[in-house]
Length: 386
Image (cartoon, rainbow, N blue to C red; front, side, top):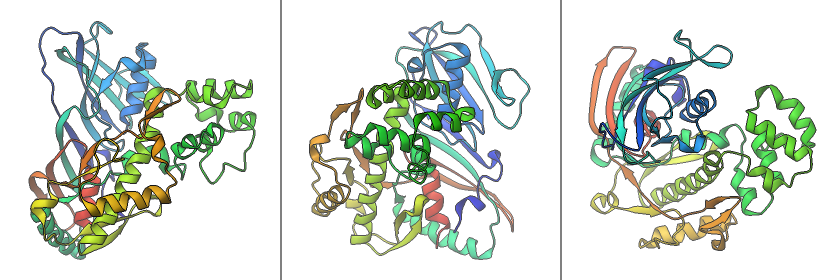
């Protein structure tokens, strides 16, 4: 099942509303803006705001990354007084600029109040989704209603979705793999070229000439530094910190998905579903110990949260060995960022207020709320895959 042949034909088919955890007042150290965007990623919007309004990137707070090919609303915080305008439109007319004429890609920010604490990743109650599924033919309807019963009983596996792997999808590899080995030159070549082309274009000068029209300014500065023989590790630090951190998030998310998938395939009757990069996800058909499973949290590394479940412990040890991850790298600082930090994530996500808004012979519109950090595209795979 090719998920994206049924969703996101138009950005308006995928509507996301962030449910904030913010105390908005008339006073505070930070201004709160509502960010409404279409066909634009959160990171792209934040970078454009930083660039065009001359606001340091690191001072822009946001709680989550919203889909690019969608219509989304979320919140950002800026230090109070950063800008005086109450509402600003940004449009892409070949290049991003401030203006009101809307096109295929645009976003706006609207002042709504102040708060004493900046937004940070994960600081939301959840997200409300309204999604149109197209080409909803008979065979798909049968799968949908059958799978919906499973979701109503047991929720769905709390895998990280495609958006978490933006730094991987077009590169076929994880930048962090090479950072862990101390090979910053290879890490940067994977970043710019991807795994398939990394041995074809070898010199930094050639990479710069080939990619120049598509490069961000900081990427140009990075490559110019490498051409001037700047050490690769120092050049790597030119990347904005939020991008460097995403390399870590992507790799740890991949490991989590592997651990959860192997746990499910080891313990429950399940079906295998294709995912990006030829990866596989496993979705359970039933759960004999749901009261236990719905409370289960899986650690990222086990350093601070040693796994209590013996199956999880065995799977983590096996996967870390296969991925050649030495526990000595856990919670260390490399190139100005902390890598392989520990934490816990629930094994299951349970949708709230699931509704069928409308349906025809060809389409269906569904609406639901997911907790912070859970992915609608994973729920859709659970509902629509065989």
